[in-house]
Structures are given as C-alpha cells and as structure tokens.
Length: 333
Ligand code: SAH
Image: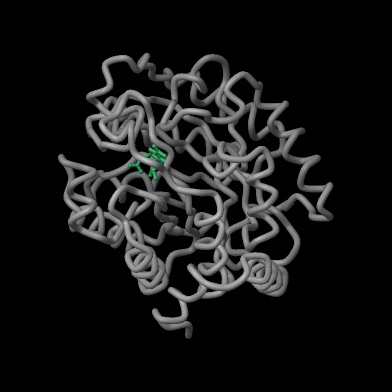
C-alpha cells in the first residue's frame, strides 16, 4: 500500500517521465494493451445545478440549451453500436425531464444493441438508481470532484458532499460498476487534498476513475482562475494507477483539450480507456463544460477513426469486449 507521504512525494517530486513509465508498466501488467472505447452521448445540457466551474451551470444564461428526444438518443446509440462500440455512456446535466419511466425505456431499448450501458446523469434517488439498474444499466459514472468538503460546498453551492457520497454508495450497493473521479487544479485545492482524493477513491473501491484538469469557462464565476495543468493531471492519474492497479482509467477529453496529444500521453502514463464523442451535429458544441473542448465539429465516425489510428500508432489494440473492470460485463443482475 502506498501511504499519503509517498503519494505526496510522487505528486510533487521527482522526474515525471519515470513516474509515467512506472504507471505504464503497471497498466501493461494488470490490464494489458487493450484500450477500451466508450461511445459518449451528451444528450442534454439542461441542468438544475449551479456548479461554479461548469459551463452548463443553471446560471449561465448564454448557454444554448438542448435536450435530445428519446428517439434521437436511441438512434445515436444505435449508430454507435453499429460502429462497433461495446459501451454506450449517456451523459447529461441534471435534467429531470428524463424521469424514471423515460430513462428506463431508453436503457431497455439500448441494451438490445448488445452493449454495456453507463449512465452519467448525476444525483437521483435510490428508487431511481434501482429502476435504472433493473432496466439494464451496467455502470454509473459520477465524479466526487473533490473530497475537500469545504471546497466542494464553495464550488457546488446547491449541493451537499455527503449527499453525493451517499449516491455513490447506493450505486455501488445496487451492483453497478462504479466510476468516479476528480478535477485537479481547482481554485483553493491543495496537493494534500488531491492525495486525500486518491486515498478516498481507493477506499471506496471504485471500478473506474477519471482525472481531469479544471479548465476555466468564460461564462462562469471562475473565469479568472488559473485552471489545472496537464502535467498535474497526468501525475495524479499515474499515481492512481500505482495505487489501484487493475481499475479502468480513461484518458480524459479535458486532457486532450489542453494538448493535442493529451490522450495519447495519458495512455502512456497509466490510462487504458478512451471515451470518444458520438454525439451528432451541433449538440457537441453546446455541451460546453469548459472552453476548447476537442472535436466539436467532427462526426462520430471521424472521432472513432481518428482515435483508432492514434491508439494503433503507439502499438496498442482496441478492446473487442465490453471492457469491464476485471473483464466482468455486462453484469448479470
Ligand atoms: N451531471 C453529471 C455530469 C457532469 S459533467 C454529473 O453530475 O455527474 C461531467 C464532468 O465534467 C463533471 O463531473 C466535472 O468533473 C467535469 N467538468 C465540469 N466543468 C468542468 C471544467 N470547467 N473543467 C474541467 N472539467 C469540468
């Protein structure tokens, strides 16, 4: 077990190249050379929350709001499945228009395309999580964002850290594969708090976790803040790989938004998952969590082809299975 002092040391001192190499070696040994692709559908940017960092926060009156219809969402998922994606991730703002029955209908239909289904739609009730699970959802993705409760409450004024934690526990208890993660470089966040975040993710036994640099958005109260660096995000991700050797770790889109090779760098520093965007048309541009988001003008197939070539160029293979933690999946109820 790596202790907090060692984590701090790895995050701040020493040559990053050798840290990345160590994480890459652990990744190869424990999860192999396959890179699992998840087709990401950003199906609504309507949100009841007002997180200070987020471009689709309720308070951003300039955001062009959209919500896919049920048919549109299902068609997008079907296209992604036809392209060969074995996991579909449905992500949105916290939009309650997608109530239990609507969500369940969508999940049931998409499950027929022989894919694992991941939801990333924020905080719901136990009854809803249970219904989604019964409808066939396999995984749930919800970042804890930070484990510094004071910082969390400053950044997410309408939300409660304890509530978010409870949601993660409910999701786990219901037998979903649990994905979480954090942002690094948040205003007021310390390295020590990032070390605590990693210990937290380890303690709750996550199956997947993403690390993203915070990128300030012009239409939010944090517009003048500095934002996180790619280097710190990669370091944090590498240390996470050393601590949690066999979990799934995505090369995050926010990393690529800071550097044109950000995801490839991540794949060579501990990551084994990529989530290409399969959202159609203008919606991509409107799902603007942060500025400089990549691929807003591309089409799903272009993203699939582009990332496929990048992955093969570094001698890795595209995963052919569902790509669950430890090869489980889809989970049997
Ligand atoms: N409503 C869902 C999805 C949130 S958006 C939920 O609550 O889980 C997905 C992730 O984008 C967030 O969890 C957050 O970590 C990240 N994000 C939001 N704003 C960001 C910003 N300005 N810079 C970097 N990442 C951001």
